[in-house]
Length: 403
Image (cartoon, rainbow, N blue to C red; front, side, top):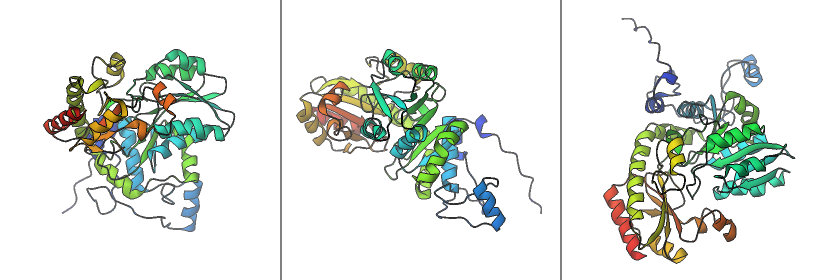
């Protein structure tokens, strides 16, 4: 009996995101495994000396060394690129490795960067402290004020950098408008899209040149492994990212890549439920006026950039921010009263997580600067997970009573 002729698979670009996340980027070995292969190897054997030479010259396809590339990591990169709608992607060991490589891969001494003030604490460190050590000038602006972006551009400005929604204030920045300003100045635009996820916002379609992720967050989504990803055009990746990563070595572990490949299969299901839960949590907390002064969630009409959020996102995200009455003391009473929701500094997890940014993720930023960013002592960031919504609301009700 002969084998049936092989079918020509439908191009991945013609399939919808959920299908791409199950099947995209898969490379099967001679064994025909269903689950993606986990290639725990440092190096690769060559058929001949000539093949080894050709691999290093780049004239023969294949792998050389897992710091440069690995089959499991390559599958993760291809799947992320399919999801993002990017021509190319490179994985990194962490999200901050992705941010650092993206900035240092583009910039040289004498260059200038414009960045939004509202950034994750470690991203602020990169922009404010690290880049100046290499002779790179930086200017921070209020991200929602387009006039400030335009005024900050200089002849030596090489890149703009922003998060939207921002961490933790959930400010929404007009990505398309900032991209237009950046390109008019001859600069690139890099967007940290962690809070929105690739499912709720597509910065490349809005004009960004590069998107970065901490895959540790929603991509893994279950609190297990670290990882990052850089996505953009083939030209951008080859010009700014490929050789920088190859030579400096912030490589993603094949095991971590394999874990995240499996996580991507369920990403749409997880994010959709987390968004539903977050919407319910935001509405509930907004009613707790005795304990809560303010609630921020992009899909609520009282969010300052609600209309912009609706225009450039397809959902409000998985994070809710609240200002608790009584400042730090009130915020700590609220957090310590929780039983289901955990206190930690991660987000995007299946478990709901509460963070006090002023004493954790943004504690190294001086208090006046934090307050200028809108991060008060009573602010809490709540990453909403997959628990039953009734249990979450009961837990939050008890926390409000403690305040």
